[in-house]
Length: 502
Image 1: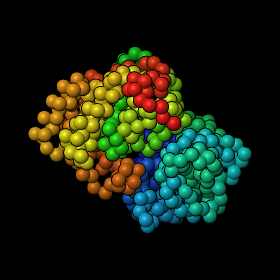
Image 2: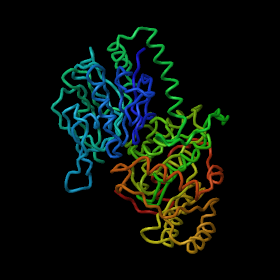
Image 3: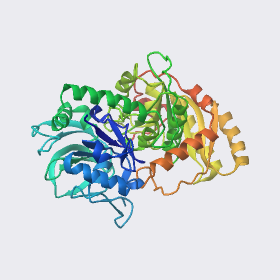
Image 4: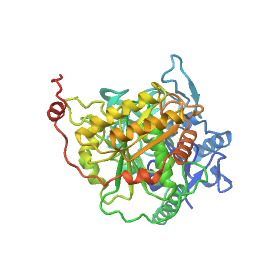
């Protein structure tokens, strides 16, 4: 019986995509499949993306099994899984000196920092077991990486056409996939390549000489595997998700935006914890991001085991994947009961840009999405955070945005918080004022994509939200979306008597 493994390691995202519905078995850090060495059971292995390298999840047992599988079977590494197969990855994006993490050396490739979050098309330029008979074909997928600059001595098989990198418009083709000399070990930066391109999946099955009976059996085993993966939060936490049917919610899921008074306020941390706490109760949760940087929603997707959807990034101007109107249409009759939208930067950043929409505020207003505003107390203190959140909230309310609640993050004094909570509630007249204490997460870099330990980050976020926030109150704020159209920039400027900006 043909068996295809999926690496199930801390820091990996085994539900980020469907992998062509090919995996039949999970392979944990001990390199075993149901108690047997993986190479004795499997015909191939898929190593997903995530933060495997940063998480340090590759044990000697797992490494040994991967190398043995590569001798007679196939290996596909995607994004972080590609890094696992390579020689080294420099994860020191903010360091003046390289900070190198070693891979398994199955591919002669080195990775350096280069951010890309585009949906991409990629010409097939080289032959491998995965791309057999496809040279000249265009495949589709998406990028979600921080270490996309590749130095390779291996045969190239994909070049991705990207529009932006490192937050700048830089249209070009970049190396996005290679294979070894034998053609059976492949690494690629392109997520969902197996989902959007059936020919790649057919090539995998042909490599295995799979007949119709084999294909049917693989699909059956894959369905069982997916149910198992999605039965727990994160990886090997044993935090079970209740097995219950999604409640009837009508055409659209509820929506709620987590916005803030500035970058670093804690939007990702709170969105992650909130998503996990709701999913733990059996509620089906979707996660979206305003703007192009979908890396911010990797932690909650990792925790709740949901896919990166084609509409996961809401466009602001020409940045991102899909316009809000189409996103809302895609959500109609979706499996989600509630969708959490993480804002971008400050809720009003970009509000005066002549491009429409260009801010979280405009997205919330256009989609009739209620907002919980988050402010960080660690920089200017609790009082400053309160004044800041009230200023943002009043501006947004004057435009027509519903401010359903406020969360002050990194609160260090309960007495001061109680005083400012009354000030915020009376000034903004919002339904919910919450607080998150100061939390220190070990071995974490300055932003979610840098040296993040996904497991530590996500479980800490989950526990913090469960212990400090009222989920029932937060759920009561969420509303079904309705696209009302974008407010013209002229109207925004006139409303606040603002001068013309170029």
